[in-house]
Image (cartoon, rainbow, N blue to C red; front, side, top):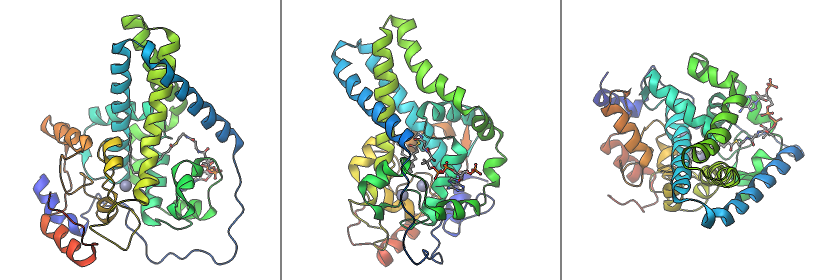
Length: 327
Ligand code: ST9
Ligand code: ZN
Ligand code: ZN
């Protein structure tokens, strides 16, 4: 099937790649008091240590070699692609197809990002789309900025997240050997890719100190990539325009788009979750879309799903908030 075929069928969510990422209007939150919040102190301590270490890493920046800073930037971009092009657009939404070498590359980058294994990430993300801003949404933004940003990782999940998540169809993820390999060996892969490799390269190749290599390309870079990702759940669900669907919370947020390499067109993305570009505007502030297009050019990816201009414009007219701009 060519890319064009997929484009013309995207509005009707073509088979066989459809996944359960479309909002479910039939779900109703259970009546009565909400379950009490149960704090997971281990996570609170680890996240506090990580953020403290990252702030310390910031102070070390002037003493780092320029190559180390460039390497930290490269690690940020690679781990970001492992999330955006990998866990998000490929595995959560099936918005394009990737060859085995590309999937192996994306799993390697994804392990560098250390954001839970792809199976767990994609399962939580599908529940997020299907039950957005309800009790069954893992990072329900109606519970406030802090909860949507990091708080949801510091407490036990609402039972509806687990109940609804267990009913999702995840056969495509289970059938992907690369995804299952990562899930099986997640701890050693994270140790290697998120910490050992980012530290070892500057130490071995240009003699950077172990101390600086630990606190900048490993700790500071990891913390920045986490926060850039979390901003999609918090800021992009709170601040910005809603040109495609004014009835939903997710927004178009330029700052998030920039820091999350193309993932801040969040009103568009929740309206058309199967579009591989997660935006109407192609390559504009969207390094991830450039990357997927490059992979297609190299023959490593195919079948990009895209929403046609006519479908987008009809939706803008029907449900947008009148803030739509043509470019
Ligand atoms: C991290 C993830 O940061 C970030 C994800 C962000 C997503 C953003 C999306 C935005 C769009 C994309 C933009 C990308 C932009 C990228 C830019 C990059 C620059 N369904 O989990 P447990 C089951 S991770 C079905 O312990 P608790 C589960 O299988 C950071 N079942 O729940 C288990 O079953 P069993 C590092 C589910 O006890 C049981 O329930 N990692 C589901 O409530 C218990 O599971 C961390 O910090 C589901 N959805 O604990 C670790 N969920 O017993 C954080 C669970 O049978 N995680 N189940 O095996 C934890 O410690 C815990 O999960 C918890 C909840 C404390 C949060
Ligand atoms: Zn969202
Ligand atoms: Zn998504």
